[in-house]
Amino acid sequence: MMRVQDKAILITGGAGGIGRGMAMALAKEGAKIAIADMDAKAGAQTLEELRQFSPGAIFIEANLRETNKLASLVEKTVAAFGKLDVLINNAHASRQKAFMETTAEDLDLSFSTGFYPTFYLMQAAYPHLKETQGSIINFASGAGINGDATQAAYAAAKEAIRGITRVAANEFGPDNINVNLISPIANSPGVQAWAKDQPEYYAAMLERIPLRRLGELEEDIGRVAVFLASEDASYITGQTIMVDGGAVKLR
Image (cartoon, rainbow, N blue to C red; front, side):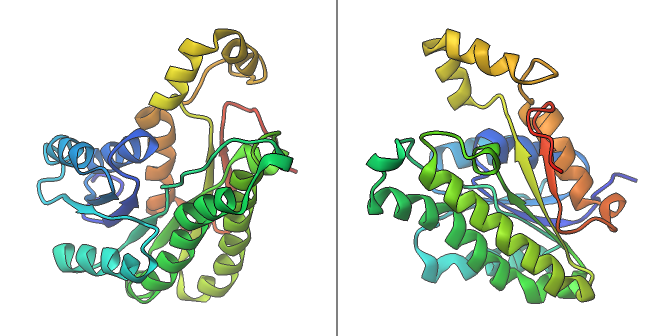
């Protein structure tokens, strides 16, 4: 038996990067996958690949800044699969700027693509997850935990997500809903482009990672998502799982 056999899973930002990596890892373990993304072209391509392992997988084109439409992502997933077992809030956009240069627009972008969709999708998903005794996987960042320079908007939204994740873990726990976070360092297309343009900074970053490599999207980040979505993680909630090669050590 595969670890998430027949579980219905909704992933935001699922068309590329970490979202795609998780979708592929979960599909290969038997999950029914719904990916939501604003990139229709990438979504169609990822969907084609997913259907090799999850024949009923669906793609939902969505702009997460349209908060009045977020509940429809949950509704479409339930309509396709008859239930929702796991919600993964992965999507997030932000601008990197010095603290004193960060504007209201920068904060709005980070919160409207990361924090608010996470919050409202958790609310929309709750009654369905209560029925399935399911789980939520949100995303944190070492940028927020460490307070990395030039990451004010991103760090603020990510730490806000950590805050509501802990609250939800306490409130949803009696309903047997697990709510956790993944905080990754991943070998994403964006990081690969940055490494090519700024090799000296990339090398310095690797030096700060004890395992001296970035996490692979499917094999590393995706496998942790499989674990958190599976029954193996049924007694874990409210936790930030650092999937970063040891870069951040929480106490």
